Image 1 (spheres, one colour):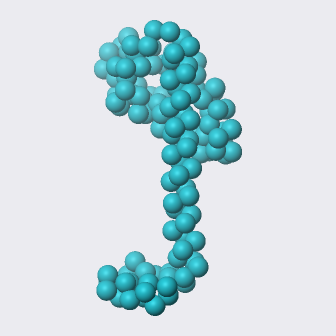
Image 2: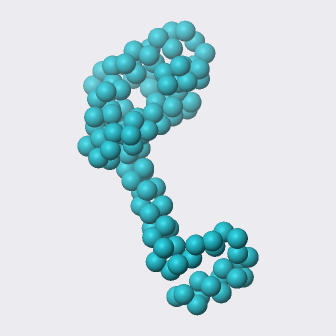
Image 3: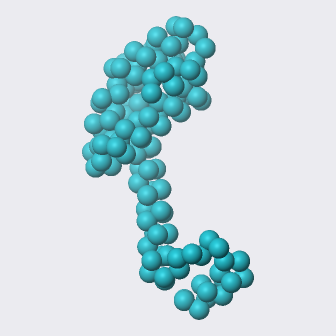
Length: 124
């Protein structure tokens, strides 16, 4: 995964700094994400998303953080926010699936909009 993140960076010095940051904080971030998500796979995904977002969009801001404590806090806060967003996304997915099962609406993707609306109104 590190190679993917480094591919977004052009400067060799940036790549070295990013790699140092990745190797220094990844385990702490995963451990923190596990405490929020309760699942190592989801935690790995969340931390991967954080590093990908940094490499793609936020590298200039992160590179400018000189204080180690501020960098650690930034990374842990990004991990917390990404983990909480994953929980929200899962809840939305689960609600949709539960609704389909509860109202016995399997195969609804093949219905026209009018037919789906009529079915939904009848079930409600």
